[in-house]
Length: 211
Ligand code: B12
Image 1 (cartoon, rainbow, N blue to C red):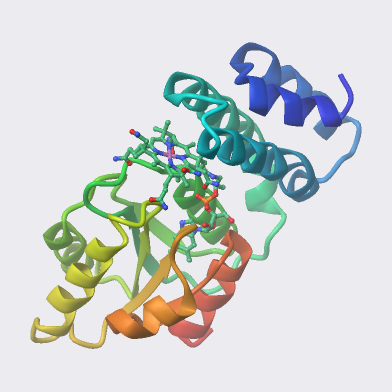
Image 2 (image 1 turned 90 degrees about the vertical axis):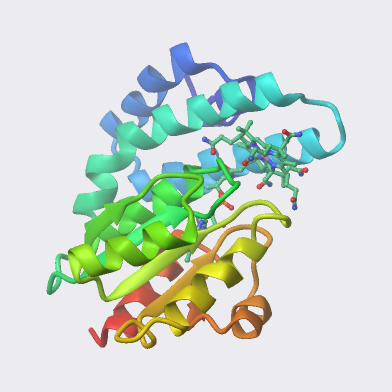
């Protein structure tokens, strides 16, 4: 199957075929990052547009998301080995309370691991207190918050306020991301930084850790 068919497999939510397609492209020597940037992410962008225009509905979007996650799982070893290992810092990552979106968050996690960072993934729908508990338990340097809904992005504020109001954790570095989030919003809620993509998230984590 040609590379463009990957995009179609994402749009159609073809979970059964996507593994072989992605594996074939890797075998042909295409870089994992290129498969992600040029085929998977544009496919997901089409899904988002069609969902917005009511041309696709939740069950179909869920199938597309499953196809995307299946493809990312196959690319994972290559994505991890394509970045250089550095000094190991621990980062806590999770999608904030009320939000079940995790594909972007998982990509950030994979790329951080590839950069040599120790990552503790709390999953989706994570209450503010859980981020705080995890930082204490793992002595983490940075917290990464993800949100994909304009309603749940406001729950990031709650997390930041909890950290800023807790003795010894006031200066914990907080990085935020996700489609509706911006640099302005990050400043507004008192987070330390924002990144629009997974590679940019790695850069920001390095800066926040002083690497
Ligand atoms: C897939 C999807 C779903 C799947 C999620 C499956 C899963 N396991 O994640 C399902 C079907 C479950 C779903 C459900 C819903 N969804 Co939805 N969904 C999407 C869709 C189509 C794609 C999201 C995605 O995975 N993109 C691909 C990834 C790679 O991109 P990304 O997440 O943006 O991540 C990148 C960056 O943002 C960044 N990043 C992400 N996280 C982080 C974190 C940090 C720290 C950093 C630095 C960077 C970073 O790096 C990533 C990689 O570069 C989007 C449309 C869109 N254009 O975003 C809608 C979308 C987000 N959903 C939407 C809606 C409305 C819903 C529902 C409310 C629908 C409903 N009526 O029930 C529910 C909400 C459920 C809930 N409580 O969370 C709206 C949100 C509108 C808004 N602004 O509030 C969108 C925008 C669709 C639309 N156009 O209307 N959804």
